[in-house]
Length: 513
Ligand code: MZP
Image (cartoon, rainbow, N blue to C red; front, side, top):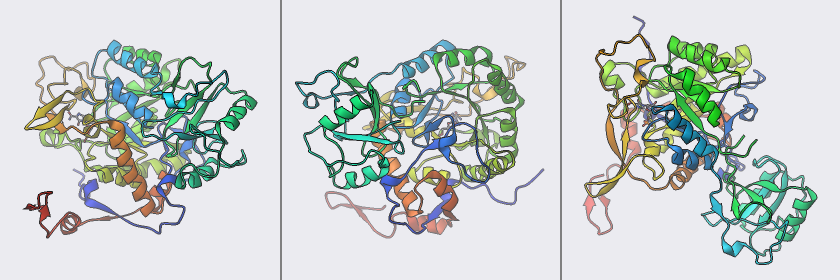
């Protein structure tokens, strides 16, 4: 047997060591755009600009293709925050296609409040929008991205704002604007209205002050008093969504999902280094319509290269690290998530330098603290996939129940008996005998209920942005290039928690940390 020299390590064993934080390194300048599928670029620029990818996400977070995580409701909520869900494939083909269609057909989340509707609004008026956080002033770029050409700023109130040249990059507009709220740049409604007419635009993509909510501003003659969020849409201005497939019924499932509008597919398996995955990818690539497909999971260089050479558009990394996963206990298969990501990221970079083709990697499973996301990205993951994290929210499909006076949500693994009437764990080997003994690789569990997805994700991403600034990085590329990581000893991990004090509660009682 080959024995690795290094132990198998996971995220919690590492710490980031800060770099110089320059003055432009502030959370509002941090760009979290990540590539989702393979693309060609100049191999001299490693890692390449994620915007060259034909499919990108604005925040590097995806939700696991699990029955207890990624239904249509969660997929809509996550896409609206800039991430991407993979609707679970462990269900009937028609049911899965219907979920994909529900996300693609989703319209309008933000209703313009009465206070924003001028009673005298007429054809061509711009209606400024208020989101749920009360941000009512929005900047418009031509393509709806923070780097797009600035078109104007609209405020829903009657502030008289100064003017700013149209060629100014939107970042420069937003920075002073943010710090002084309704500041000295921008346009009032009347001026914005004139712009709309001059540009002959019916609808406009816009971004908010925090650069991650996007809407269409519409004219009075546009359908209804509703706006379409634009986060993570390609050209038809619809939310993007992924869908899980397996290596068994892909001949029927894939065409149905592509037809339903899935933007990207992903083969769902605990062990992706298999010829069945090669066949599945080949089938997707042989379809008349172009379709993107991710594959996995793998934990080493060989597995990555096998899937990439088979044509995978991205590769998922991680075996046995999922919170509900007992694969390592049952079969002794897997690898510490950090070691796996580090090796696969290196293989991805080498492949890119050799071929000029960049194939993104996704770190899947085992994220139990928010900072693990940043560590995964610093180690080279292009984006992460999480199950437990999302299962806690209102939008996940699991039931909300009360256990021991605490609200919980149900969360069960795809390899648990509860989910496993689908064939995730048998690789699609159709020669398998029906009477073959089965054993569970996942558990059925509860996770503490945490409320709305958006509220939680905002806080998580605020931590990621802030940590990136500590590392002197304003993009995921910077983070990967500049981050310095150290393995923490068991004693220093202890030092990092609360220690040598007694905690006190609101009544002044004390308890051990
Ligand atoms: P986590 O975010 O809960 O730690 O991990 C989610 C990941 O665990 C999923 O994306 C998937 O790769 C993996 N998973 C899902 N079901 C099982 C199982 O039943 C599993 N063993 O390992």
